Length: 429
Image (cartoon, rainbow, N blue to C red; front, side):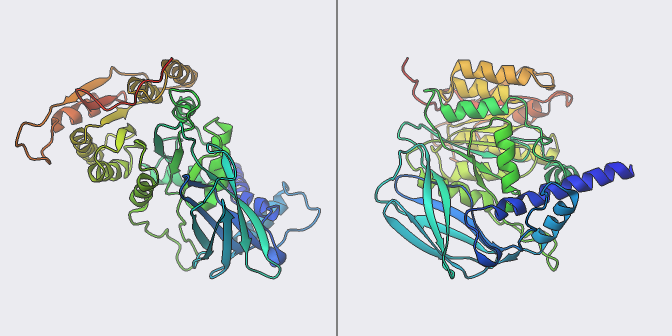
């Protein structure tokens, strides 16, 4: 038992010190250990957004083996001793535009630019020049993804218990997986990599649909999540929108992120105002509540909502039933999915991906130790009668709840949609 705990602690130290070593060799490093750390950004032809952080980090020992246990424990002390730099001025230049921002109390900067011309082709990562005001100035480079003209939708996905097993519904399990297990140990849901590649490629095969990932994890796990995505073959260069937990010795608990996910999705809807959206989440925490609110606020903008069924808790079922009502009233589709294959099958049915892509998802799913599948329950939303209140549900809440819970032994898949669900036009050929 003692040796297992010791191994777990050493693994946690390795995980927590990776960003320290990365920052040490970062191009945006200046005298006195000053570091400019930009995160991947996003944008359109009209505007781009980039977030990053400025902090001071003590230097390492030249020639020391970074993989030695002594070096890793020293790096852990360096990480704890990091000092955020508030009020630092930083300027970004991209596409003929420039913007200046100052870091907040946690050292974060947020930049918005409106390019007049794109230096590279849309659909690829674009380089943003950054300069931190210091003596001498410190230069760094950020990266933003601008989707190509041929993209047909925007996909917003949660990460926790949607892409990977983190146990959000189980707090202790979540903390263990976040802070102890490394990227290899964080098992992706079977079939999720093939599904997300298919959504990114689209039915046309090269659509380059934006994949925007949202998590309540802190920015400190940014590098680990990026590594996880790359190792599991999930679309390269995911855009990760995370929040700072603001942990310190005087405030050991995470700060409350009020309307975190709603605000991010609203911003995306405004930025990509001509594109339909697909929302992917799980039933274990707040996704049904958030997505129901978004669908109600923006009727006609959300093509489909996919919820991975990870919880049969009665309170969660109630929120999912509410989401089903909101989606039905908006004329969209809701899939309460037991697995990635169920999502893929529906996505192909509404023109998001190809039938060949469904087969690849099924093959990837079959190669893992997945739970047995149950027959999909389909619930058709009835059209509202003339003069019926717009807020009156067009589905039977009891039917959704009963289908979702089932016998409680095998995860259920439930599809709720109108008789003629919204779909993307079929791709020629």
